[in-house]
Length: 110
Ligand code: 2BA
Image 1 (tube, rainbow, N blue to C red):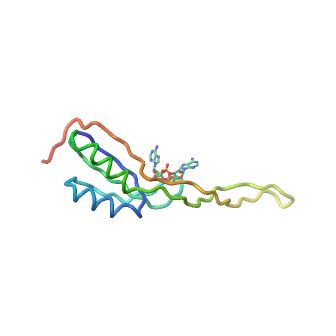
Image 2: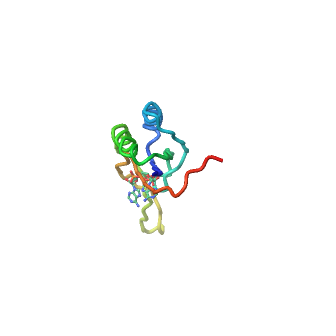
Image 3: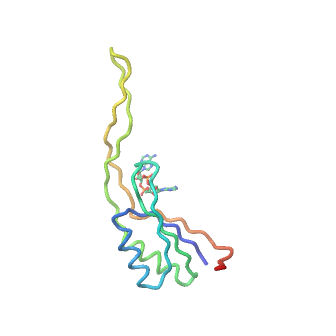
């Protein structure tokens, strides 16, 4: 059995959960925040049997789109009035999905 941890964009999360549930996967959805953009994203936990693993990965890949987002990076400028810090907008490409796959030692429902 594998544990899939998939970090996806909020915009894709409900469609992804629906698609996974329709195909018989159990899903836990967590509201999370990305460290770089400090914006909300969604983390899904899926425990899947080995023979259903690739099916789940295919659904994640099909549903999750990459998008461009604007982030602000701090920058410093030195002048006569000293040093000032102003945010500079930068464009980053986020997603489709950041996926971690772990082998599960034990799966218990107590
Ligand atoms: P964030 O940390 O908010 O990152 C959003 C996007 O900003 C990233 O998209 C990447 O394109 C860019 N980015 C992140 N760190 C950067 C940096 N130091 N310099 C320049 N650009 C940077 P994704 O790579 O698609 O990641 C989407 C979200 O997945 C991340 O949101 C984070 O919540 C999670 N994530 C990605 N890699 C991770 C990892 N190795 N461990 C844990 N979480 C991760």
